[in-house]
Length: 193
Length: 150
Image (cartoon, rainbow over all chains, first blue to last red; front, side):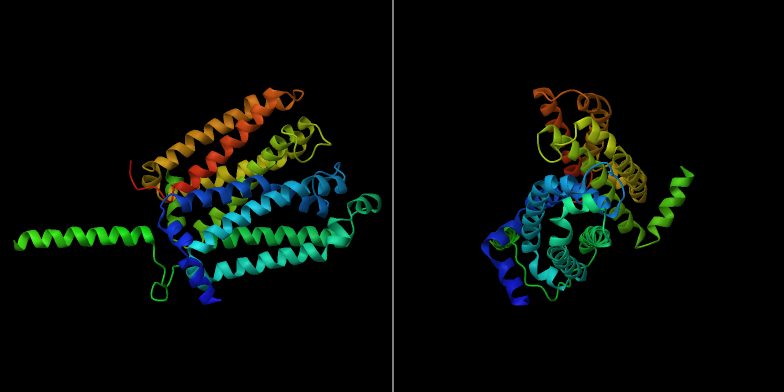
């Protein structure tokens, strides 16, 4: 896994991205905008499944009509996330919050599969027979897992990278470094002559 | 001002409070912007089409206000930990201008348009609302990436 992370971030694509000062904050902003636009759809659905808020809205309708936008938002968040993580793959390999976040992401996907038949594709029955314990559990789990994702995402930035372990290079910085060296050599040569 | 100074001392003396505030800030703007975005997407013909925009807005207003309370509580506290840095950060200044613009837009034009029948105007208002809120988020992220000082 570590060698995969090292290979990934050493690809010319991610090396160039790392060297670009504007790219990283722009993608991070898009990541956060997607969370802002689509995160609330998840919160609203979870709370509705738990029996809190939007009680006059049928569960089946809420699930069906928000499914498309939520999938779109999820794809956007993940795409930005992959681009962000790829630039620092080796550093994040060691990052405890990143690891927990990836486990939470897997648990979210797992919960989606487990509760698919009973809850997420079963909205009409939930409206007819009332919210089941399973639906409330699914909503509560999703809420906790997604808040955990947000907290771990913020936590990633607080782990100091262990610079002795890392091999990352930035093409932009490398070029800059070579320019500086050249200027210094010319300067030294001009003093000698 | 003394209260703010006391709060800032407490915040700067702890390694956990600031990141905790950031987490509440993220959850807060997800609630604030997300609940407005659901109404905006409805005006653009996406998502909860069974309800009228006005009905959606009324149902979600509690989440909008809760999110607003979260960000207005956590934001100034985070600002108080390092006022000079934020005051001299052009991304922060632009963010504050955009935030005021977004809030003014939301509580005037947006609030009125939500009650109107769908039109090209309501679509334009929805796009403007989404753009304004997205730009506030961009302003917030770039605070940590722009050069210090004006």
